[in-house]
View 1 (cartoon, helix red, strand yellow):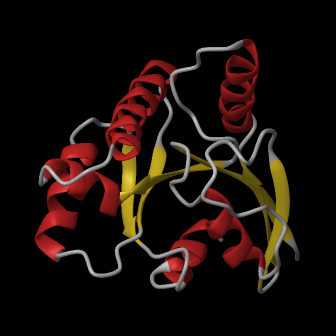
View 2 (spheres, helix red, strand yellow; view 1 turned 30 degrees about the horizontal axis):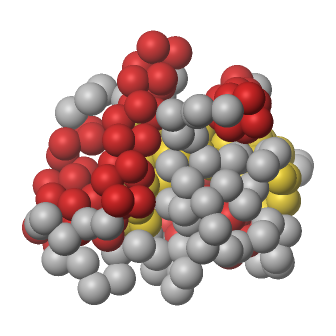
Length: 179
């Protein structure tokens, strides 16, 4: 019997949502660039794992909007979570660590603020979400554990996965969980 489910992938701009979606689908369904807000509307891709189809919804980055287009993109991103069977919140762990060590760029600091905004939105919606710490390549384990603990204590997350969407490290475990 074939099963299918929708999974919304949310996160701050440039957290790696499109890279993760492309990796899980096994094809380039989403554009990947360093430019913020490249994904302007939800993009769907289907990952097949055994007899299960996972419809991944790659959403625009969630951030504090300033213009009408920004507000529309953020609404679209949140809308992707409403009908989803599961939600994966992707966090750029390397950027958060850089900020914590005083080495972060302005974009890293904005990304960290966006993560907090997303957590608040998830708390308000009463959503239970899977946390995926991305860009773990070359990051010390104790730093990852500190981020994981800080975010897990918000009460929003049911599980935490440490992954690298670019290399595929940990992605198979996340995929198995979603099946």
